[in-house]
View 1 (cartoon, rainbow, N blue to C red):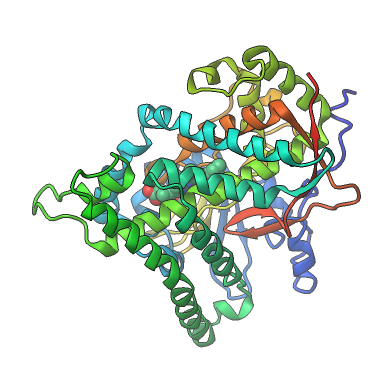
View 2: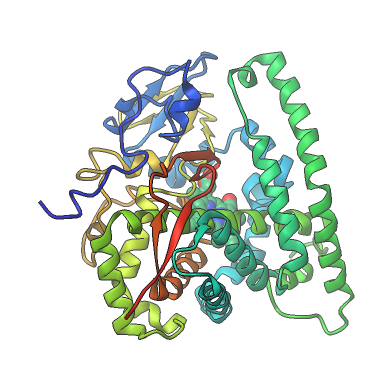
Length: 459
Ligand code: HEM
């Protein structure tokens, strides 16, 4: 048995409870992102799950079934109205909360900012932010304890502010961070939320609270947009410039201030929280798998020899890429996609799906499905060695189909550059005795932060 196989048990690696834990749900949620989904979902291609409200609810895990929902028959499976409303309380009509013509037009406008050449052009800024961070760590005494969750959030916020909006983010980033934390506190759904009248009442009250929470951030973003619009020379050609310059192909009209705000908020929030969470899980996984970390260090030392990585180095770091891909399998930062609804009756993998049924497709379940992965709870980057094949839609940390994450390539590049920069100088150890738990609120992070000890590497 290799040392990887003997590694300690990871949070979330136990199967979910056999019965829905109506009592003690809070405790179960600390160990598992979806404790109410029965363990059969990790074995069956399609599973009908009983719900307290009696809705028809199916979990689809078979890759062909997932492809049907997200790609082949995508028009039959829009996001549910409830999820759309929930996202639009925060993001207005940003990409995450829209479908149809508006979504298509805005996605087309924004796509060039996420193209491979654009992503490559962000690499120097990403690496510079990570390098500045490493220098900050250099000031800390050996063995200092840091909250990695806080550190990674600071870093990814800086990166998104610089690359997408060409600001150092100092003024906006603090506000974004505070807003995000308070908004997340509003995601405390419980059984009352699915009751007909009370549920609606609670939803409206939550929408009002979220609106108030976003007021300060909206002000900061409005100033950022106004400053750019007032810049006679047009300013840098970034995502913000693209949103301001976009014109409708038929009417020639530009995007309204509210439309621009909605996309800026969406990218600010969706673009940093997920990457920060991924970095946290990576540090945690490396701390629990010293042989993987050692092999990563060898690769980094050989290819980079202590210097800051550039985009051109990434192709020379295949093991780092395998580690990142496997971390995104074991801990996908967005463990469940938005729930979809069947507009018309359908059949998936021989199971009849009635009209109006709710459909869950969850990267977490796909990635831990027993028919798709051997010993799925084990962290093993070799699964992503070049040449290893797997069915399309078995692995989907960024979703799939037309609504696939627009920032997928940016996120992988950013994660690799941060990892390569910081792991060259540091190995992080979990605070002794600290038990990592899960906090699942759209994204999945370590609950209560991630206390780790800074250990300088001697090469
Ligand atoms: C590791 C990091 C990330 C993960 C795991 C992730 C995951 C996802 C997933 C699973 C979806 C699909 C949601 C659904 O279908 O319900 C999504 C959508 C989206 N993501 Fe990401 N994401 C990451 C990073 C980013 C970054 C860096 C950005 C922007 C800079 C971004 C912006 C978006 C947007 C705007 C959408 C909505 C796309 C659309 O509907 O057209 N994400 N993301």
